[in-house]
Image (tube, rainbow, N blue to C red; front, side, top):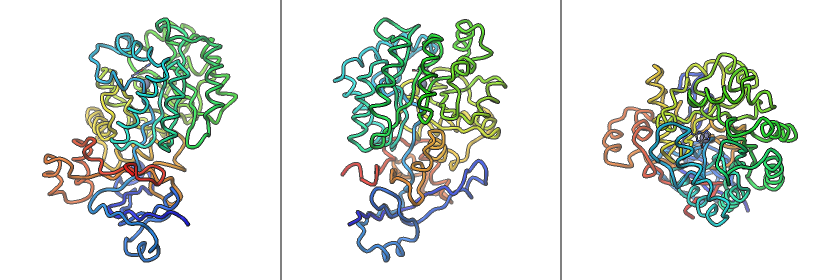
Length: 429
Ligand code: GUN
Ligand code: ZN
């Protein structure tokens, strides 16, 4: 017997990109969604679905908004315990807080404790899929995947490779980086809902030999994602220029070594040269916007409007713990604020799309997750649009759904998450 559940509420699905149509025309709101064996089986009128599926268990969420779970395509789960650490610039911040914390992940018990803490925190914020950097320790990858596997989550992660400009104890070599990444990939990629991402941290912490080895591994496994950082801060870019004097630009330090491709995810991508934008567009790479991180570390203002108009594939991410939040709502608010500073306010439908469909497209998973359409995996978040007195009093006199949801985007946090479903199962069950 198929396991069927009918969820009633305001069910939001996207029928297109709100950047290509009128933002509101790209959405549909249904009265109910039917889940069958972990997937979305139907959406429509509540009475019709109840009549045709009398055997379904019913959960009525009233006025709450039911939508795809949030997808966070650039995070560092090992930075959970040092989120919100005061600092000056990216490189000081990495050396002062990040590297000492990441050093601890050779201990499998510590790695498991933080992986579980991270997944619990993010689930309570409505995030159902993420793509995470781990540390150089294979134990950190095993811990994350094991914790996600138990929860049935679709996740992506990889061993963060670094063989220079990092402290003793946090460096591998070109060869061990390759060997350990390959072993982890073979162990985990495609197991349950798990995918492996080849993960050179960024070109300052890898020698040309290590970048070449990562490029060779990606060429052997082109279906894997490859994640790294690109052009986050101006002083970082200067450093890259001095480390790679032959390179045309920052992107070229990846391109030369086979680390540019359509399955590549480039975090931040703020200060891009025209050649870099053109090449990223030509190969149809994923650019990941991390707005709370970019303001927190003082990196700069991502050109969302220009990049989307050029046809780039853009996802929206927290970048925990350079990002100052675990919440994709807070991240959407920061994207809105950065859009305002650049003269392009994003519509609430565009913000919700970026944190679901847009991020799924960046991860090349939009055929499976990120939207409520028939056949998709049933990873859902249920939003209470009146979760605090401040939000409720604004929502109470909204004229349409978009006015009703925007206060939650701007002021909401984990209190707005009324429920979460992963793979068709209610998490709290
Ligand atoms: N660049 C290289 N490593 C990191 C990191 O851990 N966080 C951020 N924000 N940028 C990076
Ligand atoms: Zn990052």
